[in-house]
Structure formats: C-alpha cells, structure tokens
Image 1 (tube, helix red, strand yellow):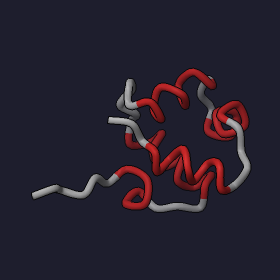
Image 2: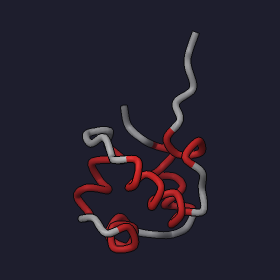
Image 3: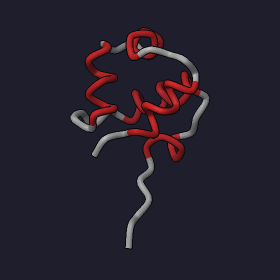
Length: 67
C-alpha cells in the first residue's frame, strides 16, 4: 500500500526524496520505495523519517482499520 501520508508530509516541508534520504542516511531509491509501498522500513528508519519531518509514527505509519 502506498504511503501517501509520508509523501504529503515530505512535500509540506518542501523536502525532496533526495534531501530526506540524506537526512536519514539512506538512498533516494529507498525513500521512493517506502512511499510507493514497495519497501517495509525498519522501526529505526521510521523513527528517523518522523524526526526529520516533525511527525509521529502514528502520523506517518499507522494505518486505520477499515470496517
């Protein structure tokens, strides 16, 4: 499933995938794959991404259950 919450949070801060990748110590491709839902990031990477975007884990990575 695509992580649009991550993409929108990154765009709100006007940060490119490349810039976010540099901040958290991964490649741009990794950020792209996380946003596309093709990569399941480690908890440590999730935390670093959240810190870089001033968001919580719930804000970016928690999926609401649908009925």
